Length: 312
Image 1 (tube, rainbow, N blue to C red):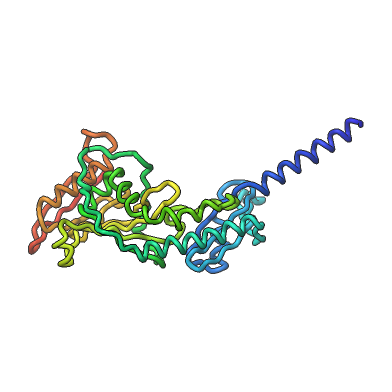
Image 2: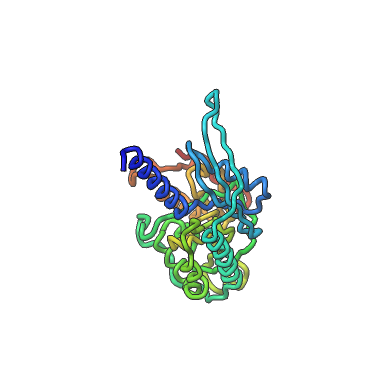
């Protein structure tokens, strides 16, 4: 066998290995809930953010549709980025996973919508000035993009949203309590995934849960809430994904730095102190340093205390 034959054989082997790897690799899942066919193609184009090419599964969980795209990004003659997305067929394994994720989403949505567990009576009052890191924390800023989720459910928790947001171990306790009934016929659906398509997590599924807080069962019976937090479920990392939050005075609670600042109304003066402790704990990177937010003005209108904060 001459050197040319050996070289060609090596190249053919290398190409076959590369093709085999590409065929067996897990392709990325890009959610595009409520999208049209054109919207799904646009989502595929936007997902290709580096030079080269890739296969993308764009999934509309709300309408149970999906399309695979071959996407590429290159630079044109004048240095401008040129992105293309061509619709292609799913492989058998990829289609298996897509169908499985649709079934999982429907089962989890039904579980959330029909949840009828007891009240979560354990106290979530934080006992530490530090944020626990038992599990990863997930925050999603939805202030400018409130999704119209199909499935929604409610879970009632004794306590308040500020302690819930600032103590991940407390959130994780509520998550484990809530999801305990889904461990069998819901979560085990994902065990059949072939990993041909990336497993969806959190807000990808277009599902949400309202965590409603209360101080006593009597107040709850009278319709008095102590705040509410909207969350999505990340069943892979087993955590809540925080989407938005409101306190007992109906103030929107900042969950990312961009939301800090502005006016907040409190019915009781001590509620403003709780708010200030929360934002200093959540967004002050160095304990004991200059507070993340300070009060710049305070006035009383009717029975409300109105505070203006400057944050930086």
